Image (tube, rainbow, N blue to C red):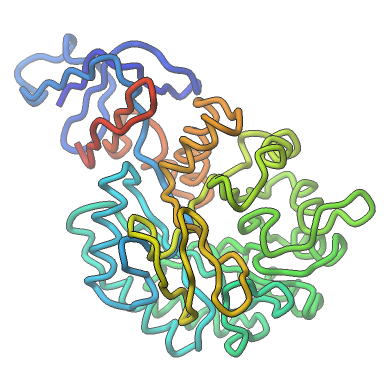
Length: 378
């Protein structure tokens, strides 16, 4: 396959007018004009001057179009994968909620059995709970919160067949135990700080022990202030820590999004959607982690207390929002929705950029960022 007449997002993080070649499902080094002996498919696509970017990667979202990863069914995963592919998210790492250990094992086992036949490819799971703080539980169910435990984590990983890529903790509940947990599992999984009320010192202790990720920065954590920088300050000071941002226009003020980029730099920010099952659906009442959620427009709130309950915005729309209303350059937004999440998942050897040998996932956007075409595996 040749995609010609496009503005290709290169590994130098700039757009260059040219063409892209995909053979046997992966990007190839040379353009069509340099191929001989019919080694490239005869299919040629005229990109009509579109932006040509890698397929997006969402490493933190719960569901869409009425389905949730915690439904624990193959049908739910298929629905999610098909929808995500249709809007340009070609690689997915859904997030689980705080539920009982037994429920989570079933959900993880279901994901491990997913055949990845069509749609977006499921490459991992992001466990937001159950090792979190009741003080910052957000839409998580408090009755299932438990202390972080390496053996329970390993039960999760066994059930998931190794798919758990990120697991969250709230270190302030027991700093000594949290440091022990991080030290014990950091070579097996990326530990994140998630739904935590930790102060700077508690968070820094976890990062010093080897935690390397911050779940939806600014949300479900203490406010970032000049005398109490909290999790945000500790994450910023851990140079290897990557931080998620929900750029849906609801969760974080545009000024704070710009501030996060200034503090962390574009290499450490990962845009996520945190979308729940109402995404792609009409306004109404839905569920998240077994709790009722009201959705109006792109705002999802718990019926019980009005807390934000995930988002109702997909990752491609978050990218558009970041560029069009938050003053984030398109080149930066693409980086933070492709290569950065691939690096966080330790999958950047196969995903995240248009480079020879990587999986041929491509999205074409017109100059107004409207979706024109999605190509998966060539």
